[in-house]
Image (cartoon, rainbow, N blue to C red; front, side):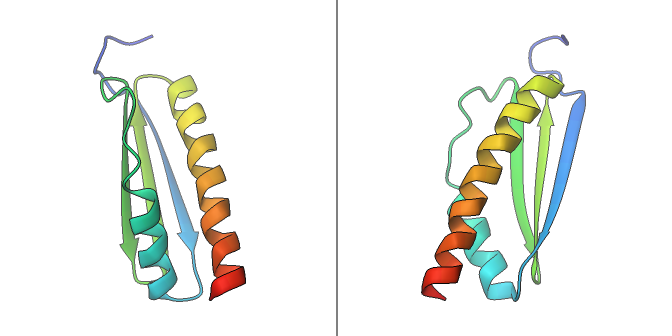
Length: 86
């Protein structure tokens, strides 16, 4: 494992949506969740038109895997809401 605060691992998701409105809503919905261990992980959310870009930078692949699984579950909920309410 790397020294505390040293981010040597990255993962990036690019999630396409039907339109930029959905990508913006997903970005705003996911972004407020605080990082529990900011010395081990950083997550950024950016939407570019209809694509949501989620970038994980962390101290280990395990830290990123756990965070990515959590974000995927939250993203699934956002998409299910679009199916029901949009």
